[in-house]
Image 1 (spheres, rainbow, N blue to C red):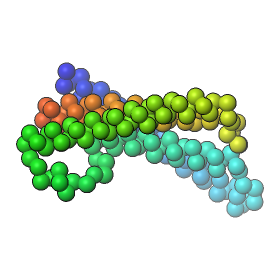
Image 2: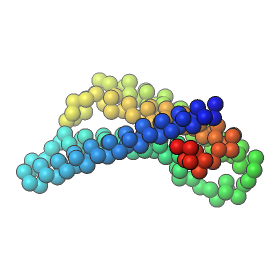
Image 3: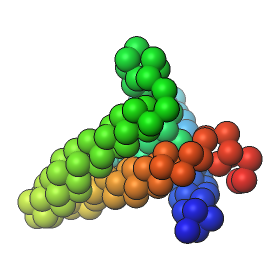
Image 4: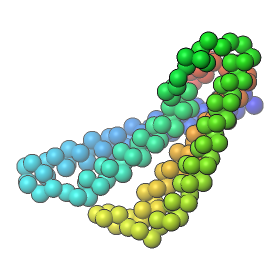
Amino acid sequence: MINALAKLRSIVDKVLSYACGIIFAIMVVIGTYQIVVRYFFNSPSTISEELLTYSFTWMALLASAYVFGKRDHMRMGFIADKITGTPRKVLEVLIELLIIAMVAGIMIFGGFSIMNLTMTQKTASLGVPMGVIYTIIPISGILIFVYGIMNIADIINDVKREQREVKE
């Protein structure tokens, strides 16, 4: 079971890191295009500006899911770092459960709701339904949810981040 979770984590990590890298590369190309047409041809492109905005949002949400999977997200550890042993495990599991609950309610349920509400609205320049743009919210929520479950399994089984990274 632990090996299956480690393999799943490795696959999801790779997919997310490649997706973020590809989105970033696309953003560089689009940003360069936008600069060239704006300053050299004095003809700003609204499509490229909109694409940059949405791709940045997508990359930020996917990268945040990746960071939650690595358990590198920001936290206030001034109390948690003083606790050791079983109480620390319990605290870490509770934190992951709170993250899962928040993600399930806000990003997954709320994301699907806003996605469905905005399927009839179109973006200004691209003409794409806003619901399509908002699909990244429940997608990243589901990824964080899955990572949360895997993180809980790692906490319970005393799998440290260093051990996970060696196996990859």
